Amino acid sequence: MISREICQRVLHKALSTGADYAEIFAENTVNHSLSMIASKVDSIKDTVIAGAAIRVYKGMRSVMASTVDTTEAGLLRCAESAAEALGQGSAQIDIVLKERLFGDIHPVKIVPSSVGNKEKVAILKEGYFAAKEYDESIVQVSGSLLDVDHNILIANTDGTYAQDRQIRTRLAISAVADKGTGTQTGFFGPGRRMGLEVFDSIIDPKQVGITAAKQAVTMAGAGYCPAGVMPVAIDNGFGGVIFHEACGHSLEASSVAYGQSQFAGKLGQKIANEKVTAIDDGTIPNAWGSINIDDEGTPAQKNVLIENGVLKSYMIDKFNGRRMGMASTGNSRRQSYRYTPTSRMTNTYIAAGTDKNEDIIASMEYGLYAASMGGGSVNPVTGEFNFSVNEGYMIRNGKICEPVRGASLVGKGSEIIQNIDMVGTDMEMGQGMCGSSSGSVPTNVGQPLIRVSSITVGGR
Image (cartoon, rainbow, N blue to C red; front, top):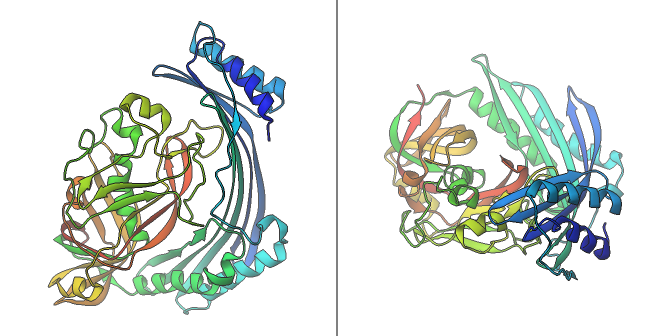
């Protein structure tokens, strides 16, 4: 993308007013998407994002400038702008860039850009019509197929000169059902850091459509969930969004470094039930949120955040690591060169436990089974959250009974992880896009089936 020699000259310019660290982040990304609605292809879009950002530090001050002009002259002008904004001084660092190859554990067999739209449309239609034809109560279906080819280069005054190519593919189907008591929506959107070969062995487009439609139809025929404080069993896969939001963001250095986290200053302390071990792992082969290197050039890592209830680590980027006096954990991420990177999650999950699923359900005399979670909101300072349940069922006398709609889970992150008292063996992950100060990035959330002994359930 940009030669090592040019990067060295640009970094020298960025240091010219006395910065103690400088970094170049260059990107060339192609997003290709197809969408369907009303039984026809609605749009085919290609979006190209290309440019570079130059960031400089001086102590705890940081300045970033960006440009679409990635010629040497354009990069030098961008570096000069960042340097001038930082202050007055002179360069004190000798720069020797050494190319680093961190390897790629995410093989891609079919690069999406090498395949025509005809084949991609066929994949999308298979999922779309599987949902549309599932039941006569389905009144609307929409679908999308996205493939991303994200190429990055990082060069910095630590001597790093490294590149990564991240190819991701995702199919998403949304279905709306109406049985005369109001519409309900079902959604399923699996994805991987893979090419189109993902549809040969891992993601079945037809099953994606059926899953979304089944959820919509089930909820359209459901009564309303009763409100109250009760035990809740939260299913695996995307159920992990509760830990991601209610606890994960509070373990990011962007909150911890400033004391704006419910878990700041608690390393080594017991913060969760001893059955809870939580991990952020950017090294899982072909996982949606995986990376080879983060957006500061640090290799991806497997970070044990909580082990048997004890807080072991935070997720740290270089800049916030300065304030904390701790090294980066490979968690610096950004949506594009236009955003300043900060600490973010990759693939974050509660590890498998030893409890059998049937025992978890049988242990509940009365409660809620949250089969599928939806969106919500959280305050990372206090950990207070509110999440919707897309698909829920009442549990009575240890058995899953009638479906219920309109359920939500309300609580506080530091309390919910204390109340997770049963953890199943069937850990799975679900895919999503996480939005924060550095933009929207692909993340996996995951867990086995878990039981929360007591939580407030919103309903009627």
